[in-house]
Image (cartoon, rainbow, N blue to C red; front, top):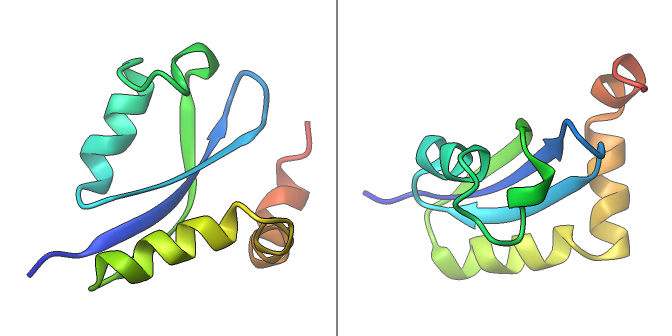
Length: 89
């Protein structure tokens, strides 16, 4: 059975977030850190700070799109508040 993961990475260079989805979370993070993703190759390295799983690709894509909105970003900041408070740079 396939799972679809929505994930959020934090760039250790500029401290900004990147949100995406994949079926293979470990492989996808490695691809980002190896510079194989055009959109993130200049912001490496990355740290995985959040992920959630779904059994349906449409649900994962909808969730990814939501997390990229203003409300979604607010949700994530509240969801990982303790992490953010501990890692203020």
